[in-house]
Length: 204
Image (cartoon, rainbow, N blue to C red):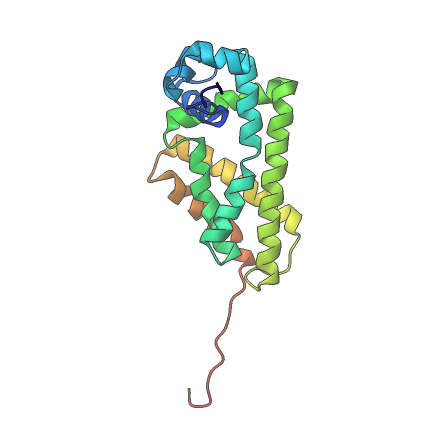
């Protein structure tokens, strides 16, 4: 007799862990909290991941590969690379849509900065995000939407704007998070935008 298929996949558990971190924070998070979020038993999580630390490391590794679906989705949604860059504002809501959720995810980021095993995943996530942004910048330049520029440096600036705007919104709490971030990204890109001047006709 073949074993019964798992109704809750490892990916499902990792997504549940991410949601639980945003809701509770990493310090007080328990395997029981994640199990409740995933709809399985804590024993099942221990069987698959072994410990809370192992689960959190797996969650960090999974998050580090987020670019693999973020950028293809943006390119599928927007024909314009600049529009896709601005559209990254919506993706930042993965970090939370309330100040409390953002704070809890930042607490997890603090762990990633202080623990070498976690930091390698944070570094990988940052590098991969930068590469995706840089590719959009290069395409925007090639397509005549942005002026010629140092795509590498502008990509870092976009990345910094996304992260900084996230924190600013959590403090100011004005309007919707994505709208706040979108405004700041547009402001950053404005000096690089190519202005197309319509040629005047002979009768104008």
